[in-house]
Image (cartoon, rainbow, N blue to C red):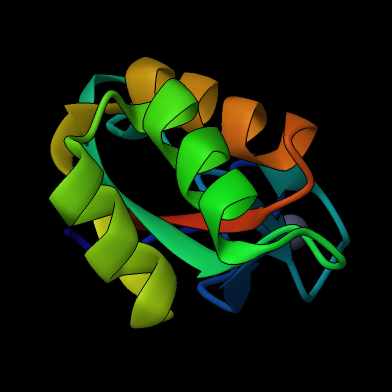
Length: 111
Ligand SMILES: [Zn+2]
């Protein structure tokens, strides 16, 4: 990815504040880089719903990601785990939201 600049002040001092949003540390402007919406991301399962047993967690992960039982089980047992690779940003956001709705923690990283 090419070097990012703040669209307001041109400062290169920008930091990621969640994918795909960035914030300028100079003037505080938040922005989404042009290339991000068409990009691809990996969905990372970071945490599973607290207080639920493993079976419920696996079920929640399967519903959100359409993973097979074995893959979902492996992901839940080996956190953090990439549960979807190289999906469009919009699809990644949908899966992340579904996981979070189930109480899990997920993040997106550029594929
Ligand atoms: Zn700025």
